[in-house]
Length: 339
Ligand code: GLU
Image (cartoon, rainbow, N blue to C red):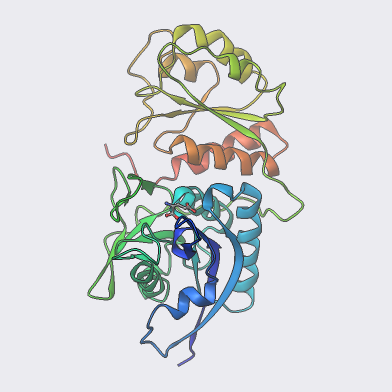
């Protein structure tokens, strides 16, 4: 039997951090050192390590995600059968979703990291990475595309969110739940329905992510930033609305003006549940905004809607094409309506 070829690409994050003289941690460990910390029992895989970046995940950019997708695509062309990406957990869900847009279900890619750095008691990095390796080498992962493996659970890129700032159990997929789990070292699959299949047109190093503004709507706030977004260079907007997708009524004329010029996606600032479409009719309600040309993010959260819009703007010049791509991706959540 041919050995599986797996690459671990290191981006930095807590999983790679060690203490400096002040006992605060920074990324220092390389991908090979991370692998060396795990005792791998399988001789059925050839495992290679590469330092792709060495950053705290807050400093990663959308163009880094584009370059990473290109690298993974190239490795797949050269025969890689699975990829593990290690990075900081602060932006894990955003990088996972960005990669899923660019790679679709080409090969299994599992992102993982650690909530406790290697010098802390009960450091979780080695167990998380061992679980991610188990996942990408399993037959269960074949059509699941990009996932996040943390704390022995496997989450679809579309639904995963970081839910806690420091606990080991900090990742969840609010609503649908995880797609699988690692139990006694063996991958188990709950369902494939939650892993949507879509792939945006290829981006390359010459195509840069477009600047998209995400505006969180807060009690009593004014839409001044939104009003100036185009002048500031933004090419698209995501509104993280209240509740089911609501804004104060004084925002409505501004949103209508902006939506006539730029694509505007309406998401919700709430952790769980979709933007509604036809329940509320007041000025600034979801129905009101959708009738004024705003696109519903449905159950895609604002952080991920921003990445979708940024990448789609980079490859679509035509307004109608852009709108239909956005709608296709947004509606491919794995959830279907039943009569
Ligand atoms: N909590 C983050 C982590 O787990 C901090 C550092 C980062 O995101 O790079 O990695």
